[in-house]
Each structure stands twice: as structure tokens, then as C-alpha cells.
Amino acid sequence: MPPVSAGSQLIVYICAVNERIYFTYIVASRSRNLYTGMTGDLRTRVYQHKQKLHPDGFAAIYNCDRLVWYERFFDPGNAIARESR
Image (cartoon, rainbow, N blue to C red; front, side):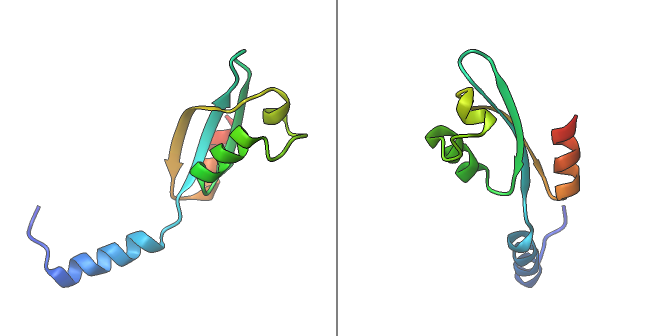
């Protein structure tokens, strides 16, 4: 890869910071129930599952609070399509 000037690195860094990242994820219970979801903030969403902050939801009812898989996307449409598979 050719050397990049400091100015170019700054532009690349600014673009990367402004990009949104989306995640499709699976959380599981000890009894192997699975919940698939999509979020823009995986850390917060897993915390919500662990704390059962949505007590009437499937994941809370079936104790799905263990992150077992995730995939990162830059396009929310691709993340939604992956969640639907």
C-alpha cells in the first residue's frame, strides 16, 4: 500500500467516524431458545436483554440474555435482510 499523507489520513478518519454501524445478532437462553434482532448499538441492546428492560418481550419471557452471534453492517437494509433469514 502506498504511503498516505497526514491530510489524507485525517479525511479517512473523519469519514469512518461519521459512518453508522448496524448489527444483526442472536441471543440465547440456557434452554436454547433463540432471539434474533437488529440494532445500531449492540452493547446497549445486550445490556437491555440482560436486565430484561422490555419485560413483556420474547427475549425476557424466555430468558434470552446470552449473546451467541453477531454480524456488522454499514447498510441498515442489509442488517434487516440478514435478520429475516
